[in-house]
Structures are given as C-alpha cells and as structure tokens.
View 1: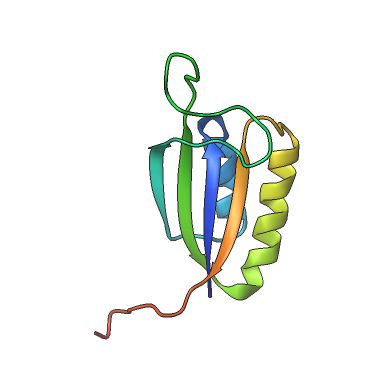
View 2: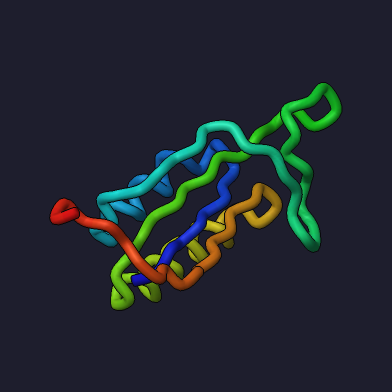
Amino acid sequence: MKAVFISLYQAFYDEVMEILDKNEVRGFTYWNEVQGRGSHDGEPHYGTHAWPTLNSAVLAFVDDEKVRPLLHDIHELDMSADQQGLRAFVLSAEEMTDKSF
C-alpha cells in the first residue's frame, strides 16, 4: 500500500475527483485551502491580494497496483494546464489500523 499526496489548483477539484473515482480510490482526506508554490515554475497560490488563488490537497492510501494508473491520469490532467499546478507524490505506507483493534 502507498500513500499518494496530491497537491492541486482548486479549479482541478472536479477532475481530480473523477480520476479518483475512475481508479476506484474511495478513501481519502481532502484539505480545501492550502498555500504553496511549485519548485520549478508556475505561479504561487497564496490566497493574497498579489497571488489570490489557492491550492487544495488530497491524501489517499492506495493499493500498489492502482498507483501507476492513478499517476498516469493525474499527469495527463497536469499537462492540460501546466502553469496551474497539479502534483502527486507517492510515499510508502508502513502500517494501518483496522476495525479489529
């Protein structure tokens, strides 16, 4: 299992939710307003007068076999508007609790 962190320009919300549905990623945590800027280019998203847009973030725990297709779909969406900001990061998920505890 992997943790997939997705940082997205808020305007991509509907498209990202469609991608999660398409890839059968049901469980996730969503933050509506986060601030940031890309590491190479793109405009900052600070929610200020000078930089009024904001990002959102999603954290999903995904079965290993679903990671590649999910990243592919996220990348395709990112290429549709490269200055707007959409990134996905994959981290190892070491352990999870379940209902038996």
